[in-house]
Length: 237
Image (cartoon, rainbow, N blue to C red; front, side, top):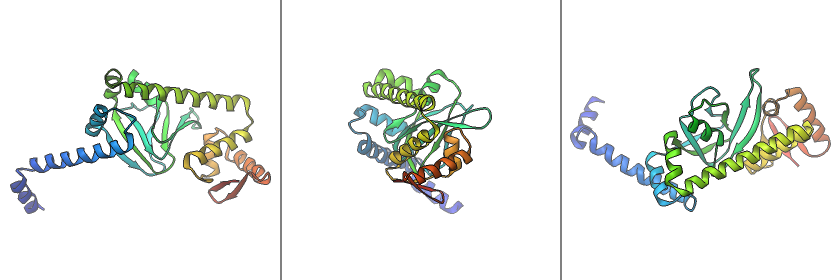
């Protein structure tokens, strides 16, 4: 290994040229990726800044992005996949607030980073997810610098406000079986599939109820011909 390192240093000048070439290659790779996915959303100058400082990530299902009590150091923009945002209580129960899908961001993380507040949410990938993370210090700077970023942030707040209103409406005005069916429909829409890979325990956590209650309600929905149950899978009919 030492001989290889010395050879590389001699050829690339202590690795500086190699690092510069690698950085240039990564820059154009990032810029190409951003242009393919975000063209028409952000202006050219913003895309170029994103290619320099944005961090592209591919995360597997179940990856925890944010935890309550932690300081938010980046803002995610989801390119593909989905992230569920949960609000836990002191007893360990978790209520589902909303989902983030393609070309979506989290209003909670935007608010916390602007106010330098600790996170009050739990963010977990619902499936394999591709996203770009942005350092928090850029969020406020870009608000004044780029009109498309300002519009993106305002639209994000509007979407999340609508999501929270729907969540409040479901809790206040709908029975638990209706909320369960609505949750399954949202998961189906998010994954673009009628097959939902989820356990009864996970669904119970997202509805802030017990697994036994969810299991009983799912059996009732199956008898009504609205779902078909199998091990860790639920099919919407």
